[in-house]
Amino acid sequence: MTRLSRPLDRFYSIIPAGGIGSRLWPLSRADAPKFLHDLTGSGSTLLRGTWDRLVPLSGPDRIMVVTGRAHRAAVEAQLPELADLNVVLESEPKDSSAAIGLAAAILVRREPDVIVGSFAADHVIGDVRGFKRAVVEAVAAAEAGYIATIGITPTEPAIGFGYIHCSGTLGIEAAPGAVRVDSFVEKPDLETAQRYLDDGNYLWNGGMFISRADVLLKQLGETEPELLAGLTALAEAWDTPRRGAVVDRVWPGLKKIAIDYTVAEPAARAGRLAVVPGDFDWDDVGDFAAIAKLHAGGRKSDLAILGENARVLADASSGVVIAQSGRLISLIGVTDIVVVDTPDALLVTTSANAQRVKAVVDALKLSGRNDVL
Image 1 (cartoon, helix red, strand yellow):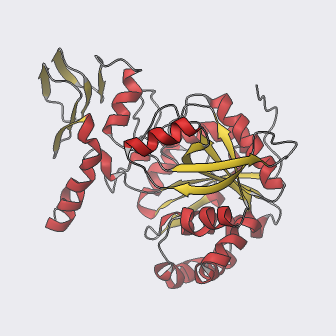
Image 2 (image 1 turned 90 degrees about the horizontal axis):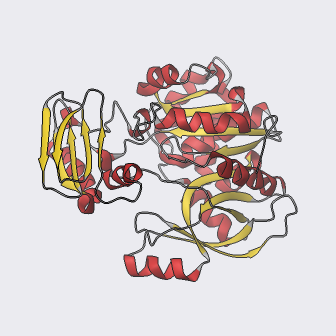
């Protein structure tokens, strides 16, 4: 059991709070993305839950949040402890390489030997002690010069996650669980996922990265030198009066690309990526089926009901209902149903089809129906 009497030395947490979560439409939208919602029924949003997990590891003064300008007020309302110095606003989304890279570039100028860890704002982790144990080992691997990630030990042949293929131990004394990453694998079909589970050398990719900031930026620069040059220019101006002008000039031209492609995968090919297996429960709450599963606790007969003042009558039904409109919703004899009722849009589907919600969002974009996005 890991007990932290004080935050980890040199460690700074980064929370990229971006992404709409289009598979959770119409609940999650551009002005109210997934991380601003309470999807667990705990009374805390996903963002607040992420913050609370990281405070013991970093301390409240060493957590940086990268988010869109439109979300600043909501983020600061949920995180009143967040220092102004640690708010990084994106003028437009540029994906995780720009978000995490800019945060690392700013922090390394303030503290050259800083170790940074990036943790998504919209994941659910119940076993906080297990999460802390894994982060402590990942920081030790970062101190040894590796870029580290935390892979989640699979509990089922999931097709909604990417996988990490790993091999032998790295022999890091303070990180005995750390092993070498051979490769990343995209989301598999069910047969392949079962093979990965049976193999035992595959972990779910949780999208958590821990590294010395200078090491992470060096890897980013080897893959995307122009992107690093832009982020460096932004970081040099960030704590000066020139910030606004430089952001307006540089940010629109930054390449939009995920950090998996600029840092994680190239580092794995070069033998520089370590993974610490995490045995804690984890979910990226990628669709409504995941929400139903979180609340069902493995029982197929449960109906999860979310929403303040929800009015739901149900008989012999299971699945999830998210009610925001105030109207009465009645369900009779339907199983694995998904109902999301908002004041201006209604979604009805099943857990098996939850991944297809993104196609609805894409169709709305093509039709110009931005009023409901």
